[in-house]
Amino acid sequence: MPISVRLPPRVEQKLADYCVARKVTKSEAVKRALEEMLDRSSGKASAFQLGRGFIGVEKSRGDVARHSKRLLRERFRNKGSLG
Image 1 (tube, helix red, strand yellow):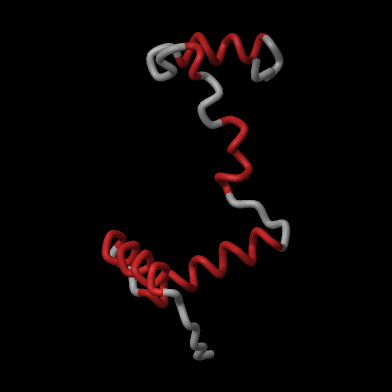
Image 2 (cartoon, helix red, strand yellow):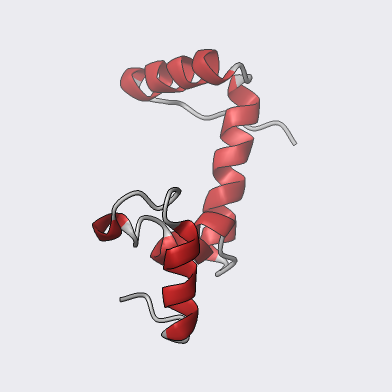
C-alpha cells in the first residue's frame, strides 16, 4: 500500500544518512522502523529487549571473556543470581 509522509528537513537528512551508512533504501528503513514500533506497542519484545538485563552486568568483574569459566561457575553456584 503506497503512503506519503512529509518529513521535517532534519529528519529527512537523518534518514538519508542512515540509509547511506547501512546501504538500505528509505522505504526499507521506514518499513523496519514501523515494524519495530508496532511490535513494541503490541507487547512483543525483541531479542535485545529480552536480554537487556543481562548485557554488561559483569563489567565490575573485569575481563569476562578471559574469566568466563570462573564467572559461569560462580553464577551456577549462586543459582543464577546476577549480583
